[in-house]
Image 1 (tube, helix red, strand yellow):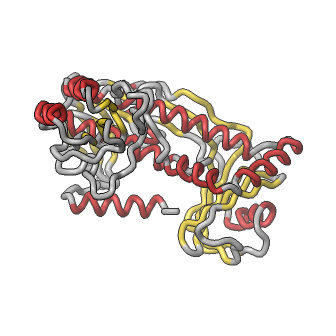
Image 2 (cartoon, rainbow, N blue to C red):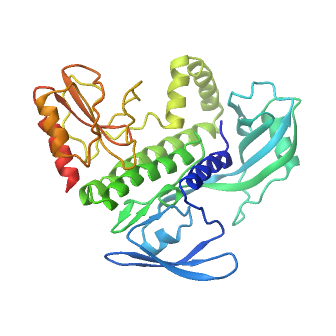
Image 3 (tube, rainbow, N blue to C red):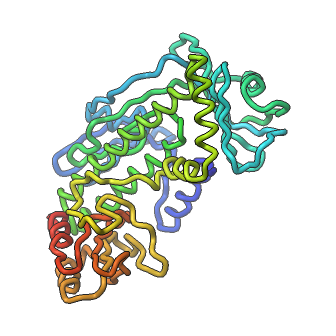
Length: 393
């Protein structure tokens, strides 16, 4: 487990090494969206305002996104009103399990997941009866202690809280992540239950999917056809995340005694198997995400795997997918005159170094984010050229 604050610190340090400064306490107060650019009014912490102009705008500004509101994009979904929820980041003594294991307690009073964040520090989430108030209040440390004693391990002591918060679960999403020169990412595009811990990874993968495509567009290497793949790819992932988290939340908050007992028996049995544990980890970390229906995909040869839309594992001592100063596609193939012609036809779009193919009689076109865009038999690589031609437009 890695706290979000630590992830942010690592990313911000990397940006600083690249000469980029994150301007905190800066608010966008107004947007003007034109056909050729976007203008934003920024307000600093001291009240100073300035207007900036950019060719593109990525709205990563959270659930109350001014970018989404300016676009008047419907945020369709619902607020789950059958429970209020609490979230607590606290220190805890006497916890009986290793600091590397997540525990989920299903009690008659409700669900209680406990996530180890760092030695002695834990994140606790629990459902509580709805208060009927407009906004759920933040719990006290004593209230969280009582919930843990009722539902979880005995003999633990909570202290030194870092964060105590009350919230309600919203399950909402925009239909289209792109509107002209404006894109939506992260919580600006989708919000959902924290069940499964997929929120931060989903948002970061939104941003990464968009970033390499925008980079190629800014450099003039690719155009609208590539940018138009962002919304269907990530919107499809968003749909699945909303369904998965809603399903997990419903299972965790069952109130029927018979259904509760069945859930507990099946859950305890299934999660004892290593393959199931690995599948859960892959889903939570989202390395199992794929784009099988992406408009970018070329045809896949039935005997070649991974197939278009699936993730290609990094290759030891092979080329780094998307590496270098600009994102590039990579071809995995044995050298041949046909492959040489493909490389020479798309010098700005392709990594000049070939990678070893998973099978000697096949060719794989790998996107900068490590997903397969097309496969082809070595005897006919036209499917590879077709994808590169479409994305170059």
